[in-house]
Image 1: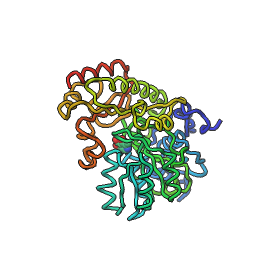
Image 2: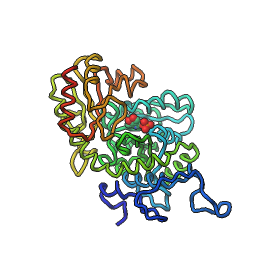
Image 3: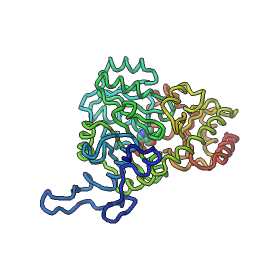
Image 4: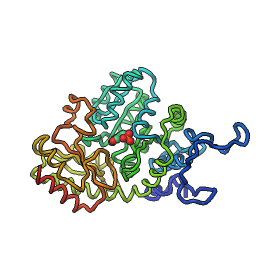
Length: 401
Ligand SMILES: Cc1ncc(COP(=O)(O)O)c(C=O)c1O
């Protein structure tokens, strides 16, 4: 059976991999060599220089291509349309190089603060990109923006960081095709276990592998995956030409992390669903946003687009608005102990943070206000500790808020 036909639970372990031919090693070795011997000038084993060719990175790239559902063959693209980078932002930066100077890009209005910063404060200036942030939860607005700006790229994050808004990927893919724009989905929050952008017609999937794919808060990396041969060809060139590649150690940690993605995501989802329901009833909590709650404004879309084992799955991220303001938020965040007060997300350990001060401080204050990233908003990344311990920890923090 071809790897591409296996269940995702099997693909996370075997996808794109085969035992190393020299020794039979089951895990791909960490190839640290920066260069490779040639028998005669230009005659080699397919490996010349490690920025361009690294077998550990290739294994990680093929694995991510497999789990995101790229069907590109080895003959069509050496790593089946998967590309790994030094960080999520390096992946985003390389994807933006698909655009020409002065092109127009439409970006979901709520995105990771670093994505906003790269577009607003770097690429507008250095690449002359015309950037419009659009609330794509309203497809009418997206259609109007497409008419007004003739975009070459549409950048979607769903669920969004931090307000967990959802975007209808199949609809965006259709609109993108009709206007000839490359559609990109940052799939970091949902992971390919829950959400299948390529199968919904999106051209390019992006990941911060630092998060759920790595899964253990011990590696920084990024990835792009496409099932489109022409796009893969351009990305292969760009990855090498720009050079912000993932190193072999990080590629190894990503390979190792992804092996447990399926079991981890099940636990993240079930614990987060319980915690979200509990928080929603807590007297010190004003409002909870979680795609798996019936109260989520796009619950129906969530149930359709984010699924695990054939059932709706809300993911591992929750945002909550506490009653009160910055003082209450601070006291709460200072008084939780299992939830580590730290940026990032998607690890086995639970993390909690204050987006307005931490991850999204780089989003202009005006835009934060429009998006609802207020002083009372906290973001939880629910880990895989025992859920009762997590609830007890939150209860302790809320009692002090
Ligand atoms: C949704 C999302 N996309 C992209 C990034 C950027 O990834 P990295 O920090 O690996 O550069 C992040 C980081 O938090 C993120 O949350």
